[in-house]
Image 1: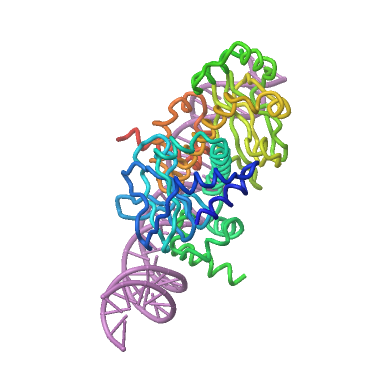
Image 2: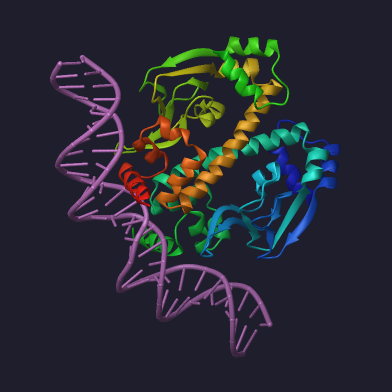
Length: 194
Length: 194
DNA sequence: CTAAAACGTTGACTTACATCAACGTTTTTT
DNA sequence: AAAAAACGTTGATGTAAGTCAACGTTTTAG
């Protein structure tokens, strides 16, 4: 179970993990299973965990006054799910995260993170790499959100994360792209004609 | 000149800079002045510098086929201007950055960054803090971009960065918010009525 | 000092996308 | 196996914001 996390880390850092690193990870991360539709976090919670997705799929979203879900991130295997700002700063999260499929996570709680692994160099290194990549991707998504047509947004997602289309239904993809399911449906029907 | 940078760093890291840290910074950063409308970087360049804004104001934007500017970031005093992805990875930047006012920057080039300061702990710490904050802010901006009305976007910006309204004309603010200058103008006229 | 840009506003018109609603199909639940 | 929920599509209609254009004001440049 911990193997996928170990490999995830080894793929990203300079020096491979040692046996003792790995046994420390096994100690502080524990397995959590979520059934489809179960929440990992809910709006208003302070996010006290970081979660690595071993298996399954989740979505991160807000809910507006009218009850409409607005999806910000989708997570599948080898992604980290959670609200990093809430986790790091301790502010209540505005997001919900729930499992879209039955899901297995490796969870670490905040106190273990801070006391036991937060200061290890491989964790800092990983954390930095992931945060930096996250910010590069968000900059691109913001730019796309502000400049592309619905059709271009779809095309871009098909190029960057084609796996999402295998894992999530269209109304979820649509929300992630900031459009309605009807618009996405029409665009796809249109694209097929060409 | 270096003082503002020193203070910027001291405000963000745990242990204050030593005299030798400061003299190292003075050595690797040099002052660059940009006249209004001058470019700091242009689309297609590999961004080989990081720039701290001592005085002035800049904008970061793309230009589409029709020549329309699309502003992604605005920089004023105490911000870092540049394309971090291009700087770090060495890919050509898609952005232009130019001075909107006469501007003074403290510049460090990539080789000095890597060889002389990149591995210092205060630089890693600063870099991490700024990158993390950037990613938190981008997440919020993405969410706003996808969920708020033009009027709500304006209101939010007035709350988060009121100083922008003193430094940049409305058509620049409008582009930063992902709307046209006409829309921004009408929204403001409307808001006044209330 | 004068000309030229840059800026902001307003009106008329257009458009991309949202909303609302109905319906058929597939998947899940019991 | 039946019922319910989730999903995807299509049509009719609405609307927020974009486009185009004109014009007055302010700022900048020669």
